[in-house]
Length: 60
Image (cartoon, rainbow, N blue to C red):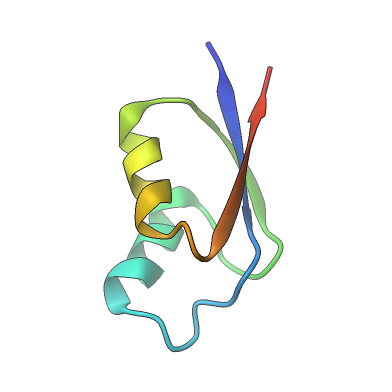
């Protein structure tokens, strides 16, 4: 199964509370944090919510 490498590229300061909680749920705590998650619809939806704060790459 494919995996996603998610990197927080922008700060969440000044963003909505929902966006902050979504970043925490993904496991991102600070700028330039990186997590690798399975490519599942749940994670895709979370990434879509904070797409302006993160970058996503597919990893094998």
